[in-house]
Image (cartoon, rainbow over all chains, first blue to last red; front, side, top):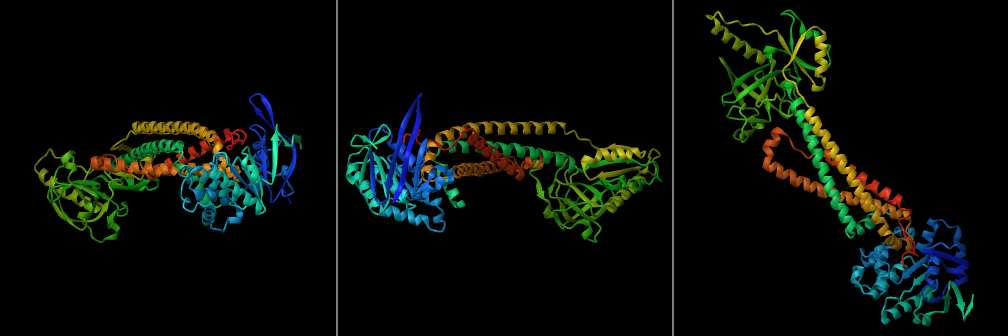
Amino acid sequence: MEAIKIINISKKYQLKSENVIAVNGVSYSFLYGKLYAIMGHSGSGKSTLIHCLGLLDKVDSGKIYINDKDISDFSEKQKNIMRNEKIGFVFQNYYLNNNMRAFENVMLPMIINKKYQHIDIKTKAKKLLKEMGLEDRVNHYPKELSGGEQQRVAIARALANNPNIILADEPTGNLDIENEIYVLEKLRNLADTGKCVIIVSHNMLVKKYADIVINMKNGKFVVKNHEI
Amino acid sequence: MKFKYYIFLASKNLFHKKINILNILLLVIVITMLIIVSSFSKTLKNLINNQVNGNLKHKIILVNRLGSEDKLALNLENIEGISYIANYNTYSQYVSTNNGEILSLIGVPDDYLTILNGKNFDETDENKVLICPANFYLGDNPEEFNEEFLTKIHNGVNYLDKFFTITSNLYKEKYKVIGIYDENKYSYGEYNVCYTRQDNILEIYNSNRKYIEELCEDDTNCNIQEPLQMIVVVNNYDNISDIEKQIQNMGYQTTRISDVNTTGIDFIILILIVISVFILITTFIILLISNNKFIQYNKKNNLIYKQLGYDKNILIKINYLESIIITFVSFIISIIICLVLYITVSNNYGAQIKLQMPLCISYLAIIISFLLTLGISLLSWYLAIKNNNSIIGEFCDAEI
């Protein structure tokens, strides 16, 4: 089943006085149960693409379908709900709130999810951290954690609302090899449980865990030197 | 989203942002100054109240009767705002007590006073009774106001149900203290003023008159005349000019035994109001600038919430709640500072201040200061948010 379908999407942005086409008329279908690795050099448009897929950025043209729903007509509120319930993000810089303990960071997406109104989200957050091997780190602040531990907290937070789509932007960018492998294996396991996992990276190790590898160049998908 | 989570999110960032610490410091200074300034205004107003409205002297009009047959009291019955009317000779007498204090006895109707402790005149059948002030100054002549005199304050309650032997020339009677009044509310601008029934004053007056007549028996130069004046006591100083005018329009000659000029105090209060407004405007401008800068700085941080699906409105509410909490925390700190100041001032200058100027932390001043500060705090947030198109940055700008 298609998790995300994009049809001819384009995204431009202004860089000083120059118009940069970050994503240039890309079409593709991302399926559930697969791990996608989008590879490419810096400036190839892969991060912009993942922000558009995650509804963090608007596309200039083209259509995005998530779970067969056209999100171009979605209001900001509907996009927020979609992001909260259906999509989990993992970033290179973790993007944790440094003023909150690990379990409080994991609680954040659940706080606004109506599904969890009557559930003890604190216990659930601690359970998720335990699953990430961080049971003795639940009360620590991000600054007290190593990079690998912070990324595991970020993954636990991404999984808090049990989303079907995981978008990871250079998730191993700041990690040592041991933690790289841990994070990639975790993401692989998520794909194996039926989730759609899309990783944007220029780390060659990611290819090893991916079902499908897509190269990106000048805002377009390239397969064996052919644009698709 | 549950309210407890709004509190949770707002409080999490509170003490970690340097800008919030600076805002708290600024607000503590502002609230403390506002409380002090407005308490001082209140103190001045209390002073006016005590010195003017609470002081019987300032509420008295002396009216000359047109003759011994003139029914002045009846003629004044229809004028509103008059508390009571008394013959000049049944109004007040200076007496001394067995303890050596000089008391000023004033005759009032049974229902005139409101008392702090004990009984009022209309609650007892006894005749020789007194209602005395909450503070007594013993031993020395209370007219001589000095440091030593101030240390001899005695609680009036200790005299409740005790007897004073009142002496005036040949007059000597035992009077029982049945009640205590608040001298801030009913003063005569003198110390040790006790109130009694008007009959008693008349009795003392008649005794003294008899004594003087006896002294004058062989003295042809003695010329004792019945006073033709009456004392009109108005209920409020604000009405006195109006009532005096009405009495004059009836053809009577009037005199005030005291007049008060409050222009100086009004001017000080005006200056204090101007200072308060200046403080508020300055704070508002500083908060507006700092909140504006904070929003620009915080746009990137708000991306964390955006990627988790937080609505812009939730983030705005959290910002507002943060500023409410900041104001509240600043308010608590300010109250503590004010209390420490108050206790220090009271300990060092308590007696003088209590006598001359009852310095108080006014509840009203505290509430107004809090509401004003909260108002400018929220308004500065509102304008800062409005000034910035969005409180959330763009991901392409955020170098994610």
